[in-house]
Length: 252
Image (tube, rainbow, N blue to C red; front, side):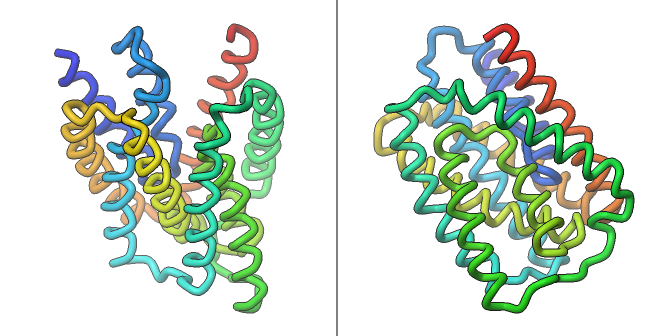
């Protein structure tokens, strides 16, 4: 029964994560409830393994329908990989609780901006020359890569918002591009957690298969529905993340 429930939550998380990120909002609380007494690092490692599989299939499916700006995305992904690993190493040394109010405020501002600027991310109009876009991508990849390894909540949402707001991508292209960065950070985290023995493979492998199925369904829906659907879904997931972070601050 435990494995069945973990797989069900992983399938749903794979769907949500493939569209706008935020799959951890579903699996992490579920695993904390279903696996009491399990070290948090083991829960995170097991979840990252499953999430990595779903993100891989999402990138593959998006690549068939969305034109990736690889000169911008690949340097950002490499920076994210390196700094995500550093963030995972740092998390054991520092208390992440101080980040919650900051992230909560940023997410509220993002949600308000996206909600009121109705045409944001509906037209794909890249804003920068290739060289400038590369350096901006590296900075964003390094910053959010470290954040994802160190703390994590909202990384996918921040990535999508930055690809839309900073680079001028539409929401569909931004979601697809964010998946590449997420894949890099997930691989770095899986390497770290696997190296330190914090992955339960008996759960992680079946969860990964379900995450792949959820991601395949999610990317198909996102591609079929387009940027308007992704924008609305983005706002819903950001609202859920805001509620989750607010609850963790009020009742830690």
